[in-house]
Structures are given as C-alpha cells and as structure tokens.
Length: 251
Image (cartoon, rainbow, N blue to C red):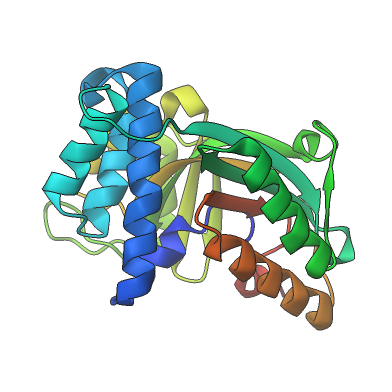
C-alpha cells in the first residue's frame, strides 16, 4: 500500500481469511452499487462498473453477490444509498495520503477516519491540500517474465517494449511486478492491447499516483504501514494512496 492502490497486494494473497473475505466482498458490493447508480448497469458502457466486476471475480466473489449489488444500484432492490467520499490527509513524517471511501453516512465516516488519523500521528487536511501532489492515472499490473500467447517467455526489456507499444504513458517496477500507467481514458484500450499479446493482467484500476515519492526512515515507514492497516480495517474505506516509496523500490 504505497505509491498506488493496494488492490494488487490483496490479489497476491492466495488465501483471504474468512473475516477479511467478507469485508472485501462488502467493499466491492458498495463499489458496484455506486458504479451502477452513476453510470448504469451495463458494464460495456460503464468503465467503473466493469473494473469493479473484474475485481470481484478476481477474489472469487459469488455471482449472486455481484448481481444483487447491481440490482441495488439500479434501484431494483431496496438498500442503503451509498456515495463516494474522498479525503486528503497527512500521515507520519508528513506523508501525503488520499483516502477513497464509500459510505451511507458521510459525517460518521469522516469522524471515524479523523480519529484513526489522530491516533496514528496523522491528520485530515482541507480539500486540495494534498491532491495536487498526485495525478489520476490508469494502472495495469503484470508479472515479470510472463508468456505471450505463443507460449514464449519474455524478459523485462521485452515486456517494457510491449507495454510501450500498447500505449503505456509510464512504467514502474515493484519487485517482480510491472505497473503500466496510462491516461484514465486510455486504460481500457491499453489493457485490451496487452491482452491481445497473451499477457496475463494481474490487476487494473484507476489510481492516484504521486508525482514524487518520499523515502522515510524505518520508524516512520513502520508508523505509516500501521496507519494504512488500521484505515483499511474501516468498512467504508475503499482505497488508500500515498507518496511513500515502496520499500522494494529503494536502493
């Protein structure tokens, strides 16, 4: 959970504990509902819904859960009305943080997140105080040394070239994962171009990507990680982004 969304980290875990699985399903249901309410129930014409359904399938969320969330979003089933909430904050060591939440009670969620931040050396800031440090980008993650549809294994340099040819705006390595960044409106096009080569996509999302990353001391990094974990435990928090440089990317 650092430069971009932590969703890829969730996917990397082979087994999700039952309690955590239930929380992930709940958060995805909210995302699907809001996506349908904003853009309609047809994923072919609703990019946000398409991404949410892909994520749900990635973690083996049952189809009936997905269908119920779509129906609630379309008003075909009764339920709470959820809406987006975007918060900006500073964490330990002045780490810049963007928090995306989905809630049926903005005041409740705002107060809960404010308390979490205060208890973990952080604080909420006014709108725009942190967001200027980030850019909205599409992010597609693939593993290094993947195979093409012809069954040929390709190296890192060849993978980078394929990504550039597919329309990537920028590239970033994190351990054995390559993050391929695009303009938000180009995410689906670049993803399809990559899939045509036979590459397996680990995840795709719209992220807040920091313009510059910071490398704090170990104590500050540990404090940030604790804050991120506590925030992630909150049922309303969907995504957490920061300008903390991934540990694996440091020299």
